[in-house]
Length: 240
Image 1 (tube, helix red, strand yellow):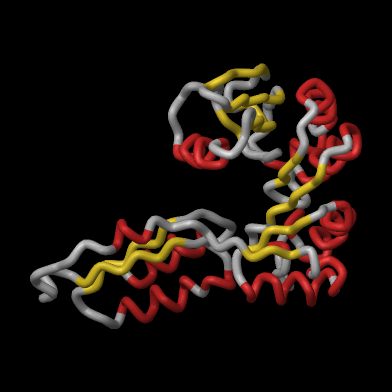
Image 2 (cartoon, rainbow, N blue to C red; image 1 turned 45 degrees about the horizontal axis):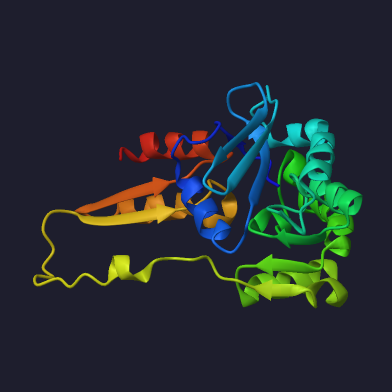
């Protein structure tokens, strides 16, 4: 169960590769999501069933309005296990569906906004903590990405919740980085790439200012978030 939006299958996209990997161990792998084309419906590709709920809003919070449909779909599918990609955005719908069909609930925690002390709007830590707690209480297992996230889970939600935590790191094909180089001399500018949300925690503004004082460096920041306008303003101010 995810609050993300997708087109009907068999359109190829990067998440489909993840679904294929996860579906290897299942007779049927069902994905409940919002539709990127407005209208809902079910499509099939290999053993992957994609159930799309009608969607008109870009914001993931729409799942609070459409989540009731997940329980209806789950009653038709009768899954043994339901996975919620987030305990809040889609988590409530997943928990309700798991209760309706007697399925085990598995919750994944990917975002630092679940522990961050400061935030804006819906993603304020206190709001997310309250909304996530009943879903985490129902879960039989909670996936976190690192020992540090498990510590944050314990500090935020308590030992009883953290005892259900399972550390499953982000999967990376390390063979992609095994290529040997024959020449390690720098040619042209030193290229730095930083991937992350545009939020104060990442401290990208400080990185920009430091790079501004170093010649022959090309910095690329990949992401999105509430500080985008501030980043663009700082780039103009620094003449980068």
